[in-house]
Image (cartoon, rainbow, N blue to C red):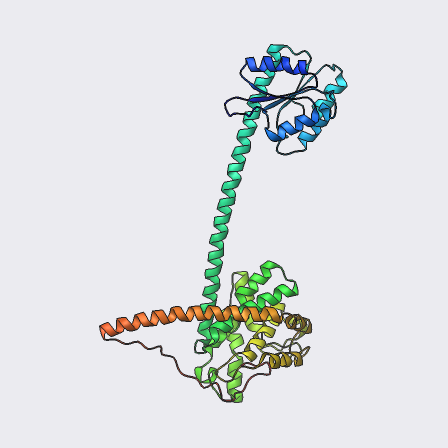
Amino acid sequence: MTQTTKETPNILVVDDEASNRAVLRDILEAHDYQVSEASDGLEALRAVEQNPPDVILLDLNMPNMGGLDVMKTLKLNREFALIPVVIVTGQNDNASRITALKLGADDFLTKPPHMAELIARVRSLVKVKAYYDHMRDYQKKLEAEVADRTRRLQDALTEIQKASLETVYHLSRAAEFKDDDTAKHIRRISRYASALAKRIGLDDLTCELILYASPMHDVGKIGIPDHILLKPGKLTPQEWLIMKSHTTIGGHILDRPTTEVMKLAQTIALTHHEKWDGSGYPNGISGEQIPLAGRITAVVDVYDALTSRRPYKEPMPHEKAISILKEGRASHFDAQVLEIFLSMQGDLENIRLRTEEEEVSENDALVGIIHNEQRKGAVSGRGISSGKRGFNPGNSAQIDTNGKR
């Protein structure tokens, strides 16, 4: 096969008669066209695949595969469908012309074609093919640019989402800043809740909203006095009333939300301590009156509270925490939500390990910052202090039946 160059158009001549091919070759080469040949339809298709031509001159009656079948095959292939085809045949009946044109033929010449007419048709169709090629290449270029810009926008969106989630985590820590385990707790709650939502079958957008909104479930604790929030012993009835008000305080902090994630955050803050049987707080609603996001957060929040160290309690073993959760089925928790949560223990462990690794990384970075500041302080005569209070988590404390204050 003669390979096509960009400067010289390639014309594929398809005819079972060698003499007919030779006549067409001589005419075309005299006008500086490259010529490829095929003696039947199957050979023509192979030639097109190996070296797509700019124009095909196609006979109709050939062995193995006729011209009409070649046309059908080419037009079904997106890569070759726009190659111009001129039917060159001894058949002069209108039915053949109409069939060929319906199949996508661009022109029709009767054998033997007049040289001037043949060259005029070929020259015109070569220009058409060049235009098609230009538009195809331009479209591919545009598609590549769109894909590249889409990728960059997606990367930027991912960074923004990551930064937004980190902002939520850090701001949520303010509510329980004096609790050393708060950072990990917030991350775990976020990921547990999102994973549970996905297992339940919620759509990706809702799962993402829960990922961002659930860390703010206890934002109202910023309004609870330290002597109550961090009390290692049992709370008095009055103190317990104040502690429970963190739900409504959170609702006020997140009041008048304008985005879906903040609306959901307010809902979760107000409802994650409600119970299935109506004995929860602040409003004592029950069953499906409690929004699903609140029911989801209630389960994961209790589990994490039970298995985490708090100023007023030691962490509980996983098995004991699961046993307590089961006792709350259909009284404290939505039984269906709880059942799905209990089936995802592997996911919980993966999330816990991932959070621990992130915390170690952040602590290493913090140690580096502190060391740098201490060196600066030593040079300037100023020291620094973390300002953190020590806690004694070993004492017994009053907790809600869900395992947390």
